[in-house]
Amino acid sequence: MLKPLTRIQKRNTKAILEAGLDVFSQHGFRGATLDQIADVAGLSKPNLLYYFPSKDAVYLALLDQMLETWLDPLRHMNPLGDPVEEILAYVRRKVELARDYPRESRLFANEILQGAPKMMAAIEGPLKTLVDEKCMVLRRWMAEGRIAQLPPIHLIFSIWALTQHYADFDTQVRAVLGPHHDPFAEAGDYLDLLFRRLLTPR
Amino acid sequence: MLKPLTRIQKRNTKAILEAGLDVFSQHGFRGATLDQIADVAGLSKPNLLYYFPSKDAVYLALLDQMLETWLDPLRHMNPLGDPVEEILAYVRRKVELARDYPRESRLFANEILQGAPKMMAAIEGPLKTLVDEKCMVLRRWMAEGRIAQLPPIHLIFSIWALTQHYADFDTQVRAVLGPHHDPFAEAGDYLDLLFRRLLTPR
DNA sequence: CGGACGCCCGACCAATTGCTTAAATCCCCT
DNA sequence: AGGGGATTTAAGCAATTGGTCGGGCGTCCG
Image (tube, each protein chain N blue to C red):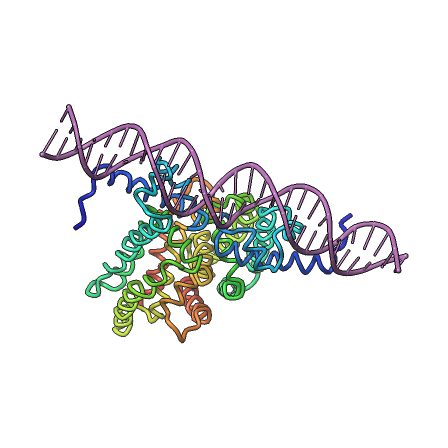
């Protein structure tokens, strides 16, 4: 059915998605323009539209691809592992994502800020399902007294908020920290400490 | 020098700022249009431009006004009060701000996401100065053993991240929580618990 | 090496962008 | 009541927006 992609197709779709990530993550959907994306990708606008049928299509492809990277680390939280260490590993992985994929984080932030007009389905569907599932695990750990009693969903929210903050508000973080700082290294240490204190049962 | 504002001037500038807050906070600077702002404000576009000389002017007025609301609660953290209670009061106030002024929070988030092109000066200036000042207070409290030893700036970052998350990611929070939840009430309780655990010395 | 299809671009489209102009109307004070 | 400034708008500006179209060019495979 689907023909294999040619060499040029692979190169150009990749360049377009890369450029789209740059521009959409910085300006949001409405603030981004096809001209700018085409320019960053090193293509003419009609050529860009030869590979993607519309601005929407580029954006949706990016959201789709991003959601995978996004949900993956949470999936890897192992119900059979040591609770505190499992959660801390998740936090650590999220800090790494914030450091290595800040554009993806900002793309997501932009979409949610605008009320998730193109992502509501994914949030209410797969994302919510996964979160609900992991909340069950957290609740069990709490019932067994292996981590502190906390509202599980809000625990997850706080992991998201604290890790993504360093990607989404990078500009502010660096401006306030001043030079001679490594935000992500410091964030890793600080959040390890924070969640260890929060989760370790008394 | 400056003439007092007429009744109509007051009404219209207020309507414009209100509408601008709506639109800018949802779409960011580039994604917002004067047509849309004028429409929300119930004015014609040329009439809007009679009160503000440009799109930039509306946006800058909003940023300016927002930064005040923003910095105010941190200013009120009293060096002479009880450390844990002072910090918790700040957290509580920030949760209230997120609940009552979510658009201001999102406006700020949008601006920072885009690299703070129109706010860098304010961040590197007044904001950084205030943060540095409060970090001194935190460091003293830590040295006196009245709160736990933590990197003070990152402590402040975590307060910002956790409280603003409930305003900026409101859509996601509500979608994941499902119905029959009061995000801000739950956030207030949870964050009180979190920071109490984090800050209370062993 | 030749045809066919994948690839690319200049020119163009209607709609929308931020903003201006000039003339009309409103409102308030004397 | 009426004059003068405050307020409002219709009309229109050049530039930019997302997207189309037709034809020319490249490249790959037989």
